[in-house]
Length: 194
Image (cartoon, rainbow, N blue to C red; front, side, top):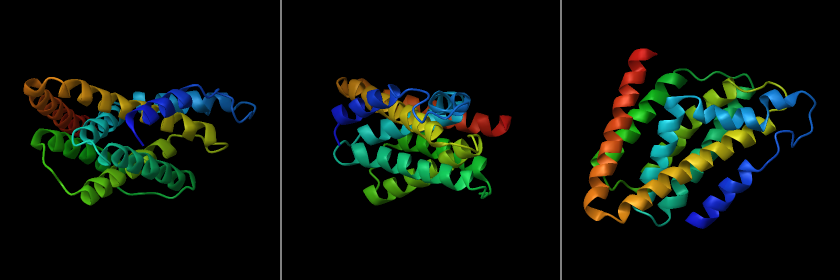
């Protein structure tokens, strides 16, 4: 899946009507509510954009594997939450994901793709679990489509920013390290607020 395909998918998901499933009264917790959820918390916003930044840095298959792993695991996490199961330390795992993703941007390390995909999927699962806990108990499909669409848009935003920066070789590495420092610091700050 290339950048244009990801962008087209993001645009398509944002055009879904709020009442796509035609459930009366579901509009309050439908696509719009799900779409807004990743934007409503700095923790989700930073982690999701960081995945896009990290995926775009090496390019190649990592460009789509990391976002796909995050989104797939996020849907699985939401499904687990919506069944009523509990996952201990989900909020701590989310804060840890922010810190580690920020550190990965700072280090600019070339980690094995399997490790990057596995770690990204684990982070996505916990973010999805929290989305699911805060989602509707009845008719959750619209809500899930909404937060998947927002997540794809945020991943594409991170990818676009990284690609835009890569045109300026000298500044790109420094800018990504600064972004990593901001993300890592925000993760630590959020841990103290929580």
